Image (tube, rainbow, N blue to C red):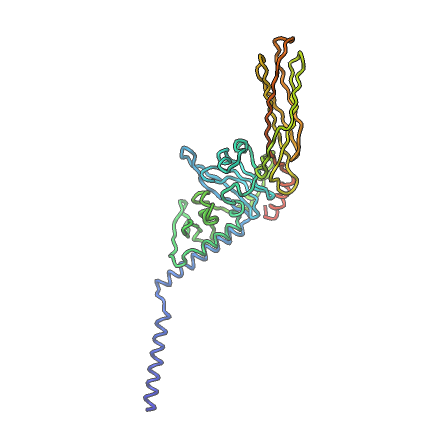
Length: 370
């Protein structure tokens, strides 16, 4: 009985050993798939770290004109958000400058009209100081190297980790991993040093990214290219002039008018009081209001003439403005009745402290290695 019990125990233990060895095994084919996925994850993370640590990058996109001819747009941005270039927003080219925490856009009247701004015709002729709400995507935020890398990392982590890696070759022969999801594709080089080649804008902004097209190509900016970005920003800031201020809205009204005509000479002068009210000046010193006055003079037998005048005014004030015309009198001894019809409009301009902005850029780029 004792020998039999020992034999039975040995058999039971032997059976357990066989079962455990069989469960712990993995097929060579499956191990290769695991290795490929691990290799891809390492390449993606290495590429995202390189993007994250870049002092600045350039994004390249392609836009087609009405005739279907493609052209390349460049948008350069530092890790701190200073930026200069163009983006393809809903098929239109929007010029953008960001410096010293201020955003300036240059776009067509149609673009501004689509964003509900009544001054669209004026805004389409000059730079406009605004904020990210006048872009469908906050490009300065989501495309800064650090933020883009962080958001792309989050997007990749949500992708199916069991999917077998997909490799492809670019036209120049560079081999890349195509890491895709429902929002688009991230491409990184398969060979070290790994770097991000391109990504779908929807990966960094699911809601508004699609307005920037299907793909943004990425390259790091260092050395002379970084210095050129600073130089180009300096030049663009110096050429902004007095941008319109989309962050403030002004209404004007004629509150008093006086007409004075000189006998026997034909000269008529209108003195007009124009009141302005500004909404949305934000913090800091309120920007000045530019007033534009137009007065139409009409007189029987003399016809019509118009004069104009401009003035700068402090917000929420009343300004006296004058302008005059001179009629040619066919009969100096006759009497003529003259009617003056004034109209006024206003716009808010945003003064730019060019030297102050340049000093801030100089400090920023010195820290970036530019």
